[in-house]
Length: 378
Image (tube, rainbow, N blue to C red):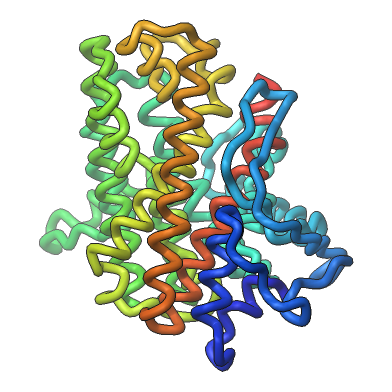
């Protein structure tokens, strides 16, 4: 049983205290009792290497990204990751996204991201459902925001894209024509297909949560599109606020769906929980900023990441901007640790498990970014 499973098992008498210890391990809190430590060797599907060290700063010398205050991935199961990735590639071929570019998608290894970020399940189909939604959201960004369609067309793309997640119910006379439009775009096909697969596992409240987070994400896409159209560089506070809703939150919000439980809607919407989880999502997205700098350096037009914004607005060197970005990331992660631990002491078992899942997502996300060719072979 993984550390995540042990500290979040609903029957565990002291799971709140154990979660607090896990979340606060960076800050020198006592470790979990020896009997509750995870196995040191392979477990799970294939040869899942659940070699879990205490949370520690993570570094990547190959990419030039400095050490980050971040937990390690809770497990590494290459066989499970390959299984999910192979299924994800087959599905992408069926939907038509990334036609002619599937070799690059395979190399990026989104199946590995799902395996690393959701260590509390070995169910490849659940991981695939989350992976479909994530890859469809990535495709929305790549096709509509990054591939040169032009910011003036962004809104006309995002409206129908959202309708793939939250269907538009038209009068009978116009419904067939609308359905043809929905099926004519591979991104819309992928978004709809991903949600349909997820619906096999998700409660209606969880699907509605995802729709909300995707709608917020699309607001972020629109904001970035307006910046690009004006070649406007936002202020640092403006950019950080933007990164809260143009973030990995739609992926992180699925932690309970993938894990096979349901976080009550009221707890997810609690302002204290919302604050902690959105700060974690921002931190995860700043990892993307740091690792994608080389990739975006070769792109055409205006590109945005936190180091670029800091260098421009605070008149510092690129290296200083990277270091300041890392400091911001680390502050967000430390804040999540402290606030999630406090919430775990009084929240429901589902909330404790969800908070631990977000923590695990941070570690898996960083581990994937540090190794994916999408960011390291640009």
